[in-house]
Amino acid sequence: MRSARPVGLLLSAAAVALWAYGMTTWQPLTEPLGPWSESLPGNNAYWARDLRFMAIMTVPLGLVLAGRGQVRWGGPAVVLGGCWVAADVAIDRADLIGFDATVRLAVAGYAVLGVVAAILLWWERRTPQTREPGTTPTADRRVLTGAACVAGVLTLVAAGMESPTDREPELNQGAVVTAALLVALAVGAALAAAPARTRARVGLAVGLTVVALLGVGLVRATAPGTRLLPEAALGAVLLTGVTLLAWDWPGGRPIWWQHALAALIALVGPVVFLVATAIPMMIMMPIGATFTELAGNSPIHAADSDLLVSLAGLLSGLGMAVLLARPSVEDRRQLR
Image (cartoon, rainbow, N blue to C red; front, side, top):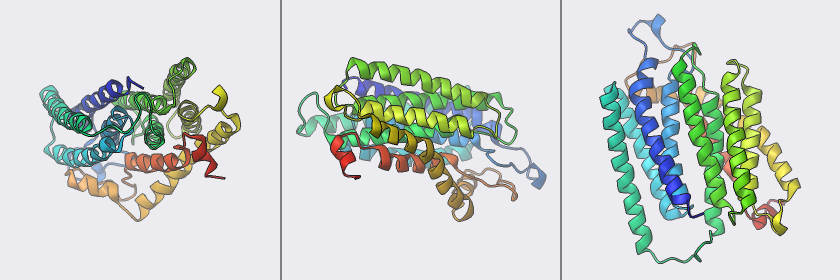
């Protein structure tokens, strides 16, 4: 897909702005005042951190899309994402607030993204091309489909984000914007993974985007604590749509029974993976508490848990990628 590069870079740039705004505007809202134990925050108190981390994850995913799934783009993109998280913790500790801080962070983020993108473009031009023009190797299609799966699961996490009070209007705004950005990335990566950009696939991509955005709105409109079914439905629609866009259509039409099986996996898989990753993180690996301490924020009350749901979403997305990132017919035959 020729437009994959500008679309991927545009989505990464949008994620940088979202990250900067989340750091300087939403994060201060989640930090309680006073050292007293009765003021310690509860479950999901640092929702702004999770939305911000998902914006950071969108940056390398956008670079993967811009690189059309090539390893020479994917490897540095992952390293960039890890370094960005480390920088985020240090910046969070500095407690930056206000419009000026937002602009400074955004400019710095754009500078980093621009340098990395320029280096990757230079590297690509210096490396001999082994692919035929206008084609995408199967390995690169797998990477793009996997990126779409990760973005799809992160969409569910962002759309269902909660807080101890669930009354912050900023939470609704942040969740909707972050989820919408991830929807665009999931659909764009899936379309880029398609063997050919036909009119039918483009129309499907537009329809999937509209339905997924409506699904995000439905999840946010549902009362906190009762969002499991709308989230599962959103995941089933979005991830099944990813397979319809990215997978081969032998004879010009999908193999419907395979997509029906993918729909079943998409309905159950994200919830299973999220639970399977969240429970160990709460009981055995206090990763969220470690990030809270490194950022100099108040610890979560002992009766609650400091769960880093963005990380659980990332791991769950990778799990779904293992199951669904099989765009070619031969990939799916290996499962038999």
